[in-house]
Structures are given as structure tokens and as C-alpha cells.
Image (tube, rainbow, N blue to C red; front, side, top):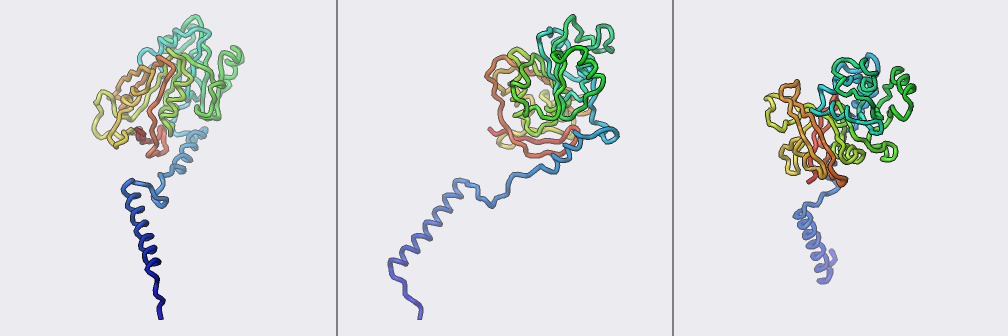
Length: 302
């Protein structure tokens, strides 16, 4: 014969069920994330593919992955005014080249007066700045070692084995000019952190010269059917242009030169630091596909 529950036990059981219903309803209304919801997509496989590109040597180096660009290439690929700014640097000033590969651009910069190949004389002056080449992988050549030995360690430095974010401010110091030609700005999986680090080691009054291919152009003259490499969107999911995002950074002046007639729509970017209190709008990575450069999609956090 089944037992009969007391009225008090029946009331307590009903109250407990009601409490569960209320908690669930409130949780859904507040949009609380349950543990069983899908986690953010992982990119380990693509990151691994990207590392193989960085570490490639000899015949394994993809044909589009260039590691020996000279200063004439920089003059062509970087924004207007780069060569003039480099030429104005004095012997106590400092230049950092991120993604320098073999450091050929810096070697060209230090070529004896009159010996520089055509196109590099824009940076020739009576004195040369201290120069630092930075590369994820060691691609230093005998030519670099010989030139560095003849000039002294305080004039030329070659850093490798780490990404920009892994160096402390004390290790790097400050720079009047920072360049990036198909380096970290085009390759990093954390774009906002990368820019924040660049600005932290840039002197007030200094400039960061870079470019980024395969993006929505500031002038809006993108061609139809373009395969974009780097795409940004705002917190609501609407497209955001790279240059409009950069112009939200405090304490900077940003200029962009849109190149709609290049193979991919490309922005040539100059970021000048005008005061020390810089702040970069944060974003998160949504997509990453290994390549040279990789395909990336980011979303602004706010």
C-alpha cells in the first residue's frame, strides 16, 4: 500500500519545483551562458600550419613568402614620407623593422654612400640611426654578421625566436620609426595587442609605417569579387574598415593611402604617436586560415 505524504512535505516539494522553474526562467531572461554551450572555435591546426610557413627553409619556402625585401621595396610599399622620415634620423635615433626577414632593408640603409642600389638613396644621410631587425625565425646572413661586426653591436641588432609581444619594453627600448612590411601587422592573430605593443615602444612624435593587403578600403573603391584577407566587424557584426578602427586609437594621428589598383586592395598606413596615453580598441579573433599572409576575421569588443 503506497505511503501518504503529509501536507507539509507536499507543500515543500511543490515549492522546490517552483523555485527551479523561477531560476531557469530568470537565467534564460538574463542570457546566462550554460556550461554545455559550444566553446569558441579553436585555431590550433591553422596556427600549426602557420608555424610551418615561418620555419620553412630553402625549397620549402612558399614562393609568395618573401624574406629578403630591400629598402627600395620599402620605399614602394610604405606610405608617402617614409623615406624622408628615415633620412632625417640622426645617429642617436632608433629604427625597428618588424618582420625583417634577412634584414636586407637595414643592410641597404647602411650601404656606403654612393653604393646603395637605385631607389634607396632616399634614406641616405651623413649619419645613420641605430637599427634593429626583428624576425620570428633566424634568417640572419653572413653579410649581416659582417656588417654588424664592422659597425659595432650598438648600431645593428638582430632579434629572432620570439614575437613582438614576448619582448619587454626594457629589452627593446624606444624607437623614432617602426616599420612593418608584410610582418606582424599582416600576420598576427591578435591585431589590437600587436598595435598596442608597437605604440608602447614608439617615442612620442615617432611614426609607425606599415601596410595591410586584402582589406576593405577607406576610400570605398574596392573592386567586386575581391578575396579579403583581413576583415573587421563591430560588436554588432557590421563591417568595420581597418583605417576607421585605427583612427579610434587615442593619442595618435592616422593616415591611410588606399591602393585599389594593386593585386589586392591595400592600405598604406602611417600612425603617428602624438601623446603617451594611447589606448587601442580591443577585438577578438573569429577566424584564422594559415597563409602568406593568413586570412583573418576580427570583431571589436565594443
